[in-house]
Length: 320
Image (tube, rainbow, N blue to C red):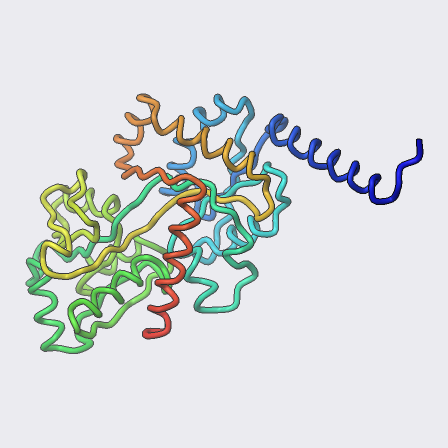
């Protein structure tokens, strides 16, 4: 029996969908590549290996090949991920706000719509640190001095447009004061060196990065930018506790190229969620001082869209 053109097209569509669904169900059938935009041994690399090797590998039954592709605060890796084949065999570490702030402030070779968020793994709130012998003992001390001395306070950040930079912008709005930001594109290590060398007065970093310097007696942590105190530095009050409505930090998770089948995205998210409930992983995460915050695909996308909206408003007022 000869099929009409319309019927033949319908049959072809059904067959294609069936094949696609079967492929998603059978996924993965070969090793998966995970792109990390930071160097081996860094926080992103260590966290990714803790999640995927061996836990997600064991759950999915395939090797996870981690590829470190550094450059431009993650932008190089974001671009590679965005232009990868959406077949479920390439994922990438995506950090907020970097992922969203770069396309807002300049022309990039990727945009947020080129990616599909898979899962958020951790949240590392921002903190302000000062040398142990600093005249500042609280955020109120810092804000009062900044108001009386516009632009005299120098605050280091880990790169323009990153979470540290955004945190300082939010603080200036909250305290109605003006400070001078100093960007250290090399990251936290350079920022802290600048602080301890007295080249800057304050450094904006993340909570997990501050603990070792606090424990060594090198710095005072003035405040943490979370809605409640964090376990790794429980003696440090939040910005809100001190009268400054600032919530900021780095959300860290994984995304895939846009067009990756929903079934594959969900299967990967489920594998990560299962991993994050394992006692052996939780023990390792505690030793690594990770602040875990699981967010699944749909909520992760909603969250990132809101962050993007808020960042556009900030950029409109204070372009960088």
